[in-house]
Image 1 (tube, rainbow, N blue to C red):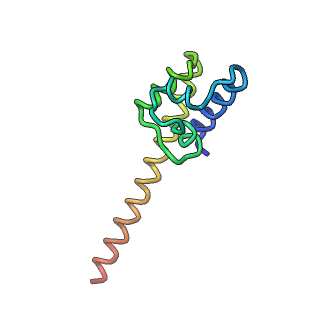
Image 2: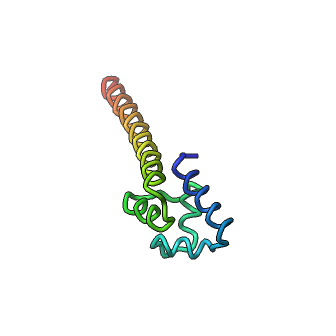
Image 3: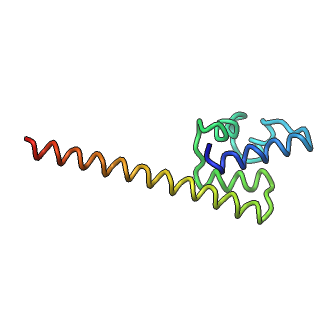
Length: 103
């Protein structure tokens, strides 16, 4: 699990333990229409855009320090995904070149 997802999940559980707030309310506070959007993000079924990340930071009332930490975790996840995708594209390009040389 990507660490930013775990961070968000931990924060949600913390808020629910302290104030017994519902998932629907948390999603609404973050500006998401779906009552399950944050759950899907935490489970890896949905991704957050930078705008969505800003909504989460605001809606979950993160401190400045928590915000910086979450942004760092998010950036790491995005960079890692881009690097993996580039690797896959490079492999596909190499296979295509090899197939063209055989022909």
